[in-house]
Length: 408
Image (cartoon, rainbow, N blue to C red):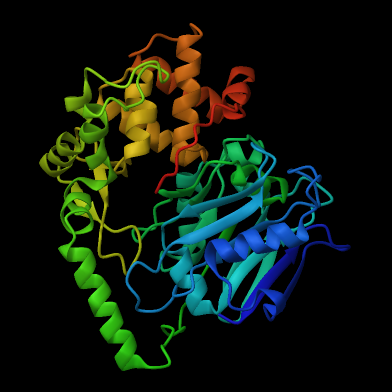
């Protein structure tokens, strides 16, 4: 990965694309790359949604290779939620594709002169960016369907939903998974709002005809990779618990310890925990033809994700993570997996973070806007965010963020 791709959205005559060597950032990747660029190039006192902020998307050091677990991607910017340097991490296919395309980072800077929305296409021949206002205010799922019609399904997408376009502080950035669904999100901190402020709706990545990155010493690499995989599979957490029950394996454990966020963090134990536990979630998925053991990107051997189908056997969303279960579940007094999955689907479609939205709804419930345990009310509140109503904009731009790290 020997190139950094820069897109100046505020250039005279329209967005300008340049590509060059990493320079001072050589040898960096992922979180190191995104935070280094933001720290060095973004003025600390700039407005997060202004032209001086930048958004950086960077794959890991081993992305695009045969290394196990090498498909994580990092997003960095000055956060509109906290005002500090934000690093947000996600799964999905984008890191592997960017790695094979040879890019150590994508840097989007400046601000468009008008309110046009743009799509950025990156492939083996380079990159180009074009305005496309037909995609304005599309949810991530409809957007990906539209992109599929134009480019096919052998690509990967990075996109924002309506929340990002409306520059809400809880807006996330979606990354498509192996099934070309926008189910993996860089959340917490409002990175989606920064991407929206730059006028970029979707980045289309196409690594057709690009080869896997090759190690300098194939034999040593293969041996090290094999040892790493064996270690993961032998460990009781990465080899048993996470593949069987996903990150939601933590629910019963944390509840038993008295630290499970319940009713807006007013309690540490939830009476309905058995209905939303990892064990119940996996059983529900299996009984409906879903899959409780699934990877979100190629090269994942832990496979802590899954596919959740509704009662009619139709795909609804990816397996809700532990954080989504407590935020939209116990924190709101909801013990209905189908309702939590519906909330997860809406969050992904609108492009909002599940932790921030679940925490916000918990606050709204305590304030009397809805009752704890009222799943229908919670769904209606999230839909208000998607519509951009007055209440929705308040909820989507709230600062009800909890200091919790999450893998989503």
